[in-house]
Image (cartoon, rainbow, N blue to C red):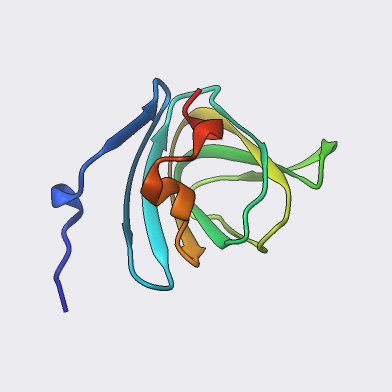
Length: 118
């Protein structure tokens, strides 16, 4: 068993508008992220079930390639996204949030998450 402190986890500057830290075990990953206003996470899906909790700002989600309907999450709101469900997101204002994934995101661990590094 190892005690973990977020202050000791490296910050990954994924792109000019996104920073993240993450910890993971065999079956779960928790990520803390900060986004600048206007950043868009493009349409994507992944095998991982995802739980998103907004701490600050507004996080707007679209699902299933439908850009006519969206869900806005504000501080204290959470959403559970099943694995393989297509989604995209827009940051309205500065956004601070956590994502929990099961299983861990291998593309984040090995740095092959090119869709975020643009």
